[in-house]
Structure formats: C-alpha cells, structure tokens
Image 1 (cartoon, rainbow, N blue to C red):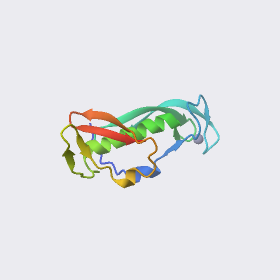
Image 2: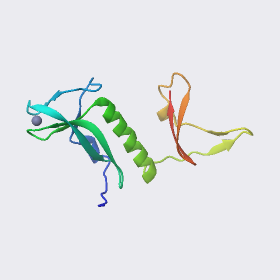
Image 3: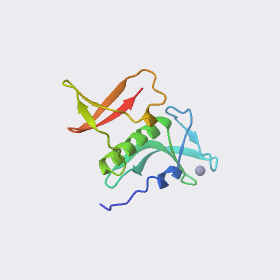
Image 4: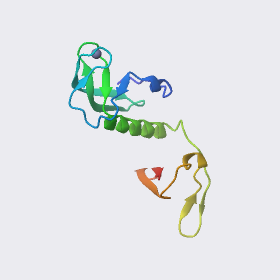
Length: 134
Ligand SMILES: [Zn+2]
C-alpha cells in the first residue's frame, strides 16, 4: 500500500461539499453543474495508513463528490483520531494524584462554553483517551 503524507491544513479546502441541513439525503442535485448526483461510497484518506469509506454522492457528469452532514461528522472524528495517533498535535499537562484519582487541568481554550460541567471520556487504548467537555 502506498503511503501518503497528509497535510491537514491543506485538507480544509477539500473537494467535498457538505450538504447543509441534510441528515441523510436520498437524492442530491449537483451544486456545480445541476445534474443528479448518485449515491456512492467515497473513500477519504485521513492519515498515513488510514482511510475511511463514507456514504456520499458523486455527480455523474462532473464528478464532484458530496458528503452528508452525519458522514462529515464521522470523518471529522476519524481525522482527530488519526491526528492523535500520529502524535503531531499535542499539549502536555502535569497530572497529579489526590489519593483517589488522577486529576488534570483542562486548558481554558477548550472550556469557554462549558455548561454542564461534565466530561465524556472515550477510551482509545490502555493509556489513551479522548475527552469531550460539555
Ligand atoms: Zn456535477
């Protein structure tokens, strides 16, 4: 399998257009040429050896590819996980032990719209997890 270096910044102007408000669209009209776009499996490379197959649409005429909103969200998560595994994006924080638990301070940049004061922890491995704060 051919390895490919992914420039995550470059991915931001990717060739995918997200169909806004479309939860799971059944048909789609191509925004570029006006033709009908067919349901299609779109393979997106998100990391060195990671690619994700997502349900989307592809225009028969001009070949433009579209992803539904839910699929785009899945793809976002896949990119985040891939980024974590590559270790090229990280912050270091000290952890301390209070006798019962390990605690860690959360950078304030991630916490400016916290309402529920809850954290969701998604395990990724024995020593890795993903935290989402609400
Ligand atoms: Zn088209």
